[in-house]
Amino acid sequence: MSIPEVDVLVIGAGVVGAALIRELSRYQLDLLLVEKEVDVSFGTSKANSGIVHSGIHDQPGTLKAQFSVQGCRLFPELAAQLGFSYKQNGAIVVARSRAELSRLEKLAENGRANGVQDLSSLSQEDLRRIEPNLSPELAGGLLAPSGGIVTPFELVFALTENAVANGAKLMVDTEVLWFKQEKDGFLVRTNRQPIRAKVIVNAAGLYAGEVAAMIGDHSIRLYARKGEEYLFDRKLKGLVHQTIFPLPSQVTKGILVIPTV
Image (cartoon, rainbow, N blue to C red):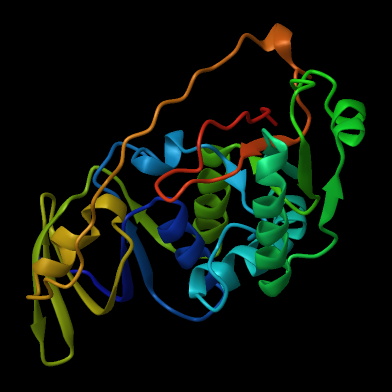
């Protein structure tokens, strides 16, 4: 049996892998996206919070800050092109006491340094007017109108479907077991069949360290942190309109309230 050959093999069909394969499908390349689960997005991407972050929380000068702001700006056009559920509802970071207001201003300075536009400070009265169901004891807030929300699995489906329509191939239930470098690329062994690829992109999410180690790269160490989500009944729709953040601590962003698209 002949071994299929591709120009680029992307390992992992979460939001990163799907976005990469969709972008690569704009070019004349033989592309293959493999996913070990039964469908795309069935790893971490299916159950994340669905927040399109504005970039106010990220450390200035980092790639994360750069890509958060740039990516946030791309979402309205991307949603219009691909038809997934998205809303630019904005985000509010709240101060629970007057003592936290100075930290709120520092967060605003952080966001401006990252290039986040149209940030505005909110008084207690502003908060009550914009989000009347929040506690009246909150001291103030910071509004980032560029923030948004998305249905995460819809986003991954839409990106992947567009890539496949452009000629990329998709294999689910396909786990990469090992691979080795050859003269003109890589030989990849999966649970289904071997594959030859000129280039491999590691988009394996929580398993990216394991995939990298298959070729001797032990530099990627991931320490996963499991969160909790509580889903309210749909009759509470409109409880909040913006995504609500408390001021972050050094270890967590705290308990968020996130509307559904």
